[in-house]
Amino acid sequence: MFGFAEGNSRDTQPFSRRGVLRACESVGMRVLLIEDDDRVAGPLAEGLSRFGFTIEHARTGAEGLAAAGAEMVLLDLGLPDMDGIDVCRTLRLRSQVPIIMISARNDEVDRVLGLELGADDYLSKPFGVRELVARIRAVFRRARPAAAEPVAVMSAAGGGHAVPVAQVQRIGPLSIDRRGRQVHLRRRSIALSPKEFDLLAHLADDPGAVRTRQQILDAVWEPNYFGPTKTLDVHVAALRRKLGDPAWIDNIRGVGFRLMPPTAGASTRLAEENDEGGDR
Image (cartoon, rainbow, N blue to C red):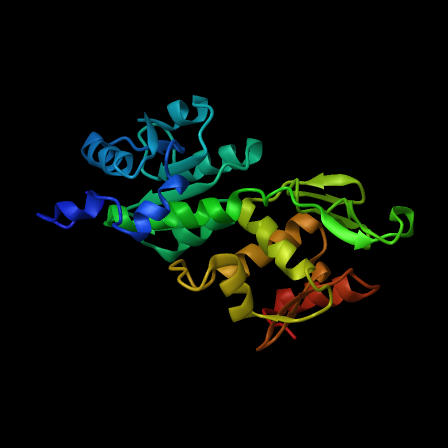
């Protein structure tokens, strides 16, 4: 069971009014459902199809990894051939497709581990189709590349008129391409999950400025985010590891985080603070 309210068929119907206006977000979206229990997968696929999603069903981790072309993955953790955590890890190593874990496992350790390995959201069973659809739409909005609208700046070469320039921001040896959602550090590509990229891009909007935890959650996870409270710390830790130096993201205790190029001695100081379990 994944959470239909018993006897309430409206849970599988598209939202009226507002849902109709937003139907274009769902129509034709290819969703890969990796779920071994047909008693769950059948009604879930039927419910999602009513919202306009195209569902491909894989019953094992191997089938899910062999599938191609999905725009969203719904991943159960209790698969017969391999743990869903391993499926998530493998998917994330080769693709940036958004992943929502759906599982009866409600332990915080499983949720945090899944998010740290690259899942974009985690939904515990039982749940309703309406909530799942809302989460799919929210994750897809965050993960899809921004519209290709070049930044316009005043340029002498353009006769004083606004001309487009590449949307690549450089912060020391770090470069962030928002249009292509690519990150390079010292010309080496850094593979980030969609949420990790959004977090980095948000902090990079104003390098050196401290963003409060609530500001970050509102901007990156949206105000109605239902995930684990530790998810921000998990994603910050993952970003620090991938950037190769914890000093890139400074933790201001009781306030929030800021992004800035590491300075001499900063890495040693932050490493010592992390070992002691403290922050500034």
